Length: 319
Image 1 (tube, helix red, strand yellow):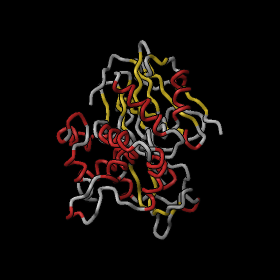
Image 2: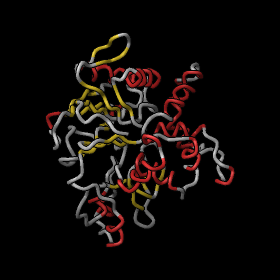
Image 3: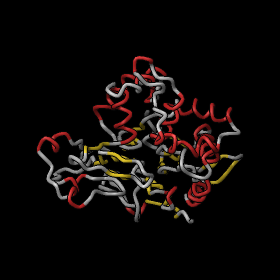
Image 4: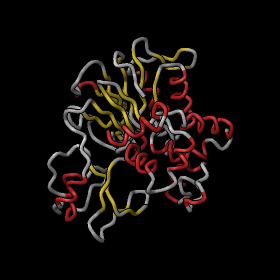
């Protein structure tokens, strides 16, 4: 979906139900509430997805973001958590061997639990929001910059432009995502979850939430990596012995690269920490773990073609 290249935008990372923090950030950015909607005379917001799950005020956050979008004050793209919610309720084709597009596993039940609990008494509202999630584009772009939740891959997005109207899911594409080997599943995984690599043989990682996996998230901008540690991109890192292991030539050849000459790219998703700053002159992650008492971060984009560290704005989330 194309956004106006002449506008100035405030891009905001993963909200995850932190509605009060979001109002503080919008206030700090100069937005004011008029008739219940946060507005700015000269700017619009672009939300990078993952409005739902985990946080204390998911319903309030959804209403705030939805109302800004409907009033023409914001855009919002789909995050992996919005897709999880859609997939949880969408019956899978019988030949997929699954009951639903998103399996009802303990992991996904845990991720969605806060959202379900906070909408228990608002079933009609929740159905309306699920319908709205289908309207969220998977990506935004113009000649100056690009926006996607986790990873921009031109080869995938070129095919999505042919398949989807304005980058939005349709019912057939959503059902196709039930098949792990189908293009829909692979495309959604790349754009909404990023790139990953299998861990060295026999090694697993256990997340803070107690779920074990045998892969790790990787950088998609490292031009000359030599070791596993050079490409890891996740909060928990890798054990030191694994981080020092050299990458094989075949592993290097399979790594995806968003090039230094590509347009500015903004992503969320990755649970960063520390002082918000560009990853590279044309790449910024704006997810700084707000729902884990980190920061809710925005970038104030105007006409620049290189990211400016001074244009990151954030609110610290207090316990």
